[in-house]
Image (cartoon, rainbow, N blue to C red; front, side, top):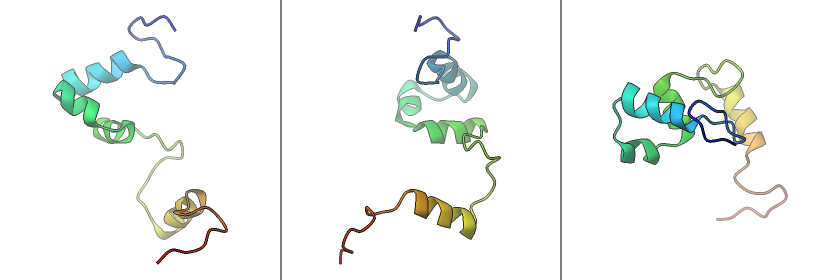
Length: 80
């Protein structure tokens, strides 16, 4: 990692470029920029981070996400 502007770092994010897009392009204040999650910034910039074309949430996509990211570990006793 060289740290030069425009470099893609091992984490896959071009922070100098993202900061320019958020602060200069969107007019965010630095504290507003750093308060955003990468997903929120991507949404504001009109980027698709899903890799699958995005699109609106529907029941099928919600079921896929619920299966992939369950609220409780599989086999855990329900609470409540």
